[in-house]
Length: 185
Length: 204
Ligand SMILES: [Zn+2]
Image 1 (cartoon, each protein chain N blue to C red):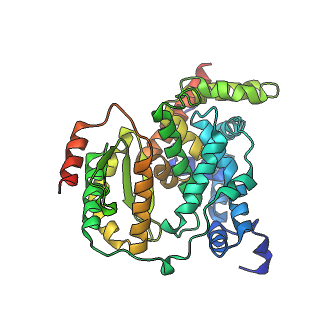
Image 2 (cartoon, chains in turn brown, orange; image 1 turned 135 degrees about the vertical axis):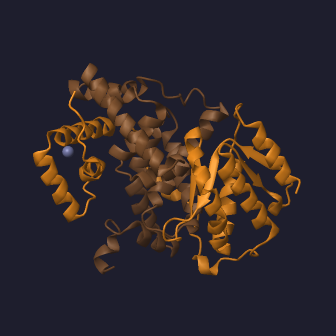
Image 3 (tube, rainbow over the protein chains, first blue to last red; image 1 turned 45 degrees about the horizontal axis):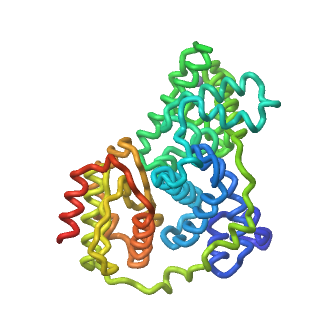
């Protein structure tokens, strides 16, 4: 890497991780800024209503605390998503936060979106949200990771703990279901 | 409703095309295909629309500085870490536990005797360690659904993957398992068989 990447904005994750380990806190800032929004969106997509910031922070703390468990450059995001998912499931199961976390039900995702931009949402977007909201939880999660986050089936399999083949099947079932719902409406 | 395109390869590439992550060659092929295939063009438009809709999900503001301040202090590079003994009884227990995970499909037993605790916890999720393609990135995959059952086929590969971990990797893995095990877990549908096996491992 050249001095051009010194700012860290464009540096790959692996380089920033090395710099953070060497004591460069700005490298951590770049990594957090790069990944926190997508982790937050993912956590919200799992049905978290309150405490998203807390889960995102906890995921970063745990991920950075176990960075030596992997040396790849492309898997930090997968690692963060995997930990965040675990945290959301644990909270859901614990019951202590049942009022904050709600199991995603049919139509829930559409509800979740409405508060944000009901004013600007086009009719087609509302239909799309409705269609996505009708997917099963697993279909929706896989579909979101593939379409919204651009993850490979391998990455999706790592995050949700399944196989690449199963992830592919969930994706195509979700896509078919969305098409059918849009067509039926 | 329009029939799906029979060119599965092209359809599989559409989300990556959407995210601009294809190589130049692949991108050109997808572009050429989209220009001539109505079904794929419609699917691409649908994915684009879905992405817009998903991007609109309400997400609270995340304070980067606050997260950075909460991060642990950097860990020295792996070469300087203290090591744990290779092929220790703990390693055997770990391998046994992980084999059980892969075969059992629904439960995992984490032997904690390494830390002087004889207790074993049954966790209602599947955790499977494996090495990534280049054996450079051990990954902890976690699942809470029966959909992870196909992972059973990986069971035989787990031993090799585990023994390939160096001591520092193993130490990290155990740290991770410890963390996960320490998390609150209460699920009514734990498999009884899992608990029995967990007991067997703990009693060894
Ligand atoms: Zn086509």
